[in-house]
Figure 1 (spheres, one colour):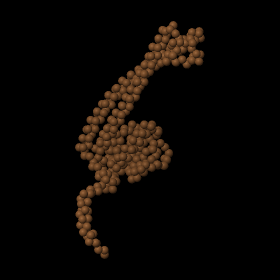
Figure 2: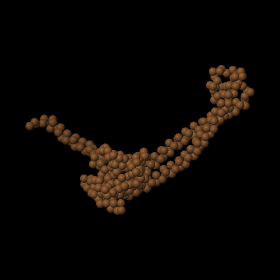
Figure 3: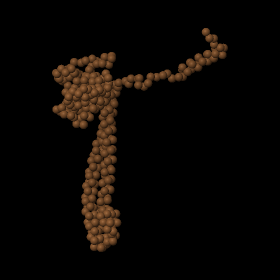
Figure 4: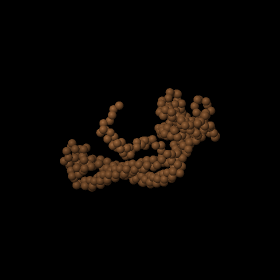
Length: 330
């Protein structure tokens, strides 16, 4: 066994004191912020947030409405400017043609010293030919000058009004997006106010429920159906319970189809996007709502794997779920 040197023995208490001091002054290692579970807001807190968001939403919608009214006024002015330019352009073209004709006649009669190569290329807008034509056509030239100036001004006004309209449209789009963000927050808070029915096991899975009510679906499925209908709107209908035993959840009252078209037709681009938005929202809220899986456009997402995978071809628009998202709950 090694024996410590006298110097080491004398320094040992100092090391102990230093170590103790470091232990006091060094901050404790804290778990990352993600480790702290964010507490679910209370109903009172949610209602307070909803009231504040509603006020903000009303203000934004009022501003958006006022901007729409202003935009309509600007659109009318811009339309008038375009129509005025159209008339001025027609007058300018007519006067230009007459002036060219007059210049040609003058040249053919020897009254102008214009180089023949310039014929057909006369700068009428710049009026380079006016001096050559002479004072005898002064009245005609004065009329052309007036038409030309009106055309120039009409063009400037039309461009200015077009720029103003473009700026208004951009401004309105920003206001619209701001209002939509607040409305989305309102929807999120409303979602949280609805507690998901049913009992959840310690492993996170859900205890099955019995269908009830005239629609023959479970309370859990009924809540999902209600939230989607209110949040997204489903103009082509929602089909849930059916008696056919196909191995799925429809006869158990635990599945619904949110239709995007009729008669097995491919949905429009707008309706297809609605299907994507419904699917994304369901995936985002799957753990909270007791979602088992989602099928859309020949792909399936399951809560166990949390990934989308391609399904085999079942031979049709409806069978491959191109015209509806299918949602099943536990």
